[in-house]
Length: 144
Image (cartoon, rainbow, N blue to C red):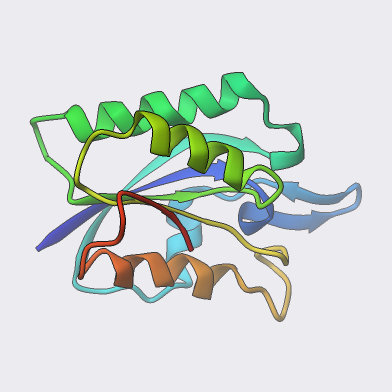
């Protein structure tokens, strides 16, 4: 069975409406519940809950290090990684990962334009799509 790690970093995909606005607050396991992904073993990693407009190079480096650690792990190896990420800085994270990623297993970043509790939220669909790209191998680092 395919084993994929989902690394949650925040962003609109993990956000819910509050009195103060939309805030990143949902954990990876919560996000996965609405995707109805089956026949894939999923490991969740709640790395951070940061709005991507607030993400800096330190956050991006932390994501890169987490990816490297997950891929280097010999116990419970994984077949690929899906990173939930805010769309403001997805490309910066993708560029760094592409520069340092030296493993054939796919790393896919995904996000959303609408909060996870919005009636027309796009997060569940956007999170489900990378799992499909784990089957025929996606390019090493991609944005979905």
